[in-house]
Length: 286
Ligand SMILES: Nc1ncnc2c1ncn2[C@@H]1O[C@H](COP(=O)(O)OP(=O)(O)OP(=O)(O)O)[C@@H](O)[C@H]1O
Image (cartoon, rainbow, N blue to C red; front, side, top):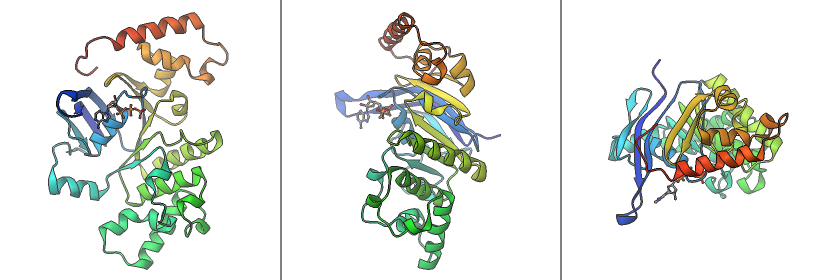
C-alpha cells in the first residue's frame, strides 16, 4: 500500500548566515492511511520543524516528502499554494486559543477552509459547519459563540473540526492535549481514534509525553537531536525500547513503572548515556 505520508532522508536547516544550523539530519517516517503515528522527542529535537516541512512551510535541503505517492517537497509558488489550499494535510496546534481568531464565531471558524475555496453559499457553509460540529461532538448551541467563550477542550474540538472540514488525508496534531486536563485529554484522544475509524484519516501525533501515546498511537517514531533513533509499534517501544533515549523516556511513564518503581541509579546511568549521545557529532539519519 502506498504510504499516506512518506518522509525520506529529510534534512532541514534553519537560521540565517553563520547562525544557520541543520535541525533535521536525514529523518525517515511514514504514516499509512488510517494509522496514528506518534512522533516523540524532547523539546528542540525538531518535531515541529519536521511537521512544518511536511506542510511545505520550510524547504528541505535534502530528502523528500510525499503525500499519497505525490512528492510535494519540491513544490514552489503557485503549485505549493494549490497544494496548501487543497488541504490534504491539516495542522492542529497545541494551543487552540492562539490558532483561533477571537473575533470569529465557532460556526465561521469551522468552515474557514471551505469559505476560502469559494463557491459555497451561506446556507451551504452553515450546513457544513453543523456537520463539522457533529463530527467533533460539539453541541450546536456553541456555534454562535466565540473562542473566548469556550473551554480548552471545546476550543481544541473546534480546531480539529476546522481541520477535518476540508476533508484532509493527514492530520498533524502538535501536542494537541498538553494544555488540557486529564479527562479532557482522554476525550480529545478518543475523538482522534474515532476520526481515524470513520474517515480513514492518517494522524501524526507530536508529543514529548510518551505516556499520552499509549492506547492511541499504532506506531511511535522517536526523534532525538534531529535524528530518528527508533521506530516501532507502540507496544515494542513501551515494552522493549532499544535506544538509550527511548529507554529513558519509558522509565518516565508512570503507568508502566507503577508496579516497579524506576531504580534511580539505573535512571541516572541512562541519563548519562543519553547526555553522551547528545555530544556525538551529527551523522545522517538513523
Ligand atoms: N526559524 C528558526 N530559525 C533558527 N532555528 C530555529 C527556528 N525554528 C526552530 N529553530 C530551532 O530548531 C530546533 C528544533 O525546533 P523545533 O520547534 O522543531 O523543536 P520541537 O521538537 O518541536 O520542540 P518543542 O517540543 O519545544 O516544540 C530548536 O533548536 C530551535 O531553536
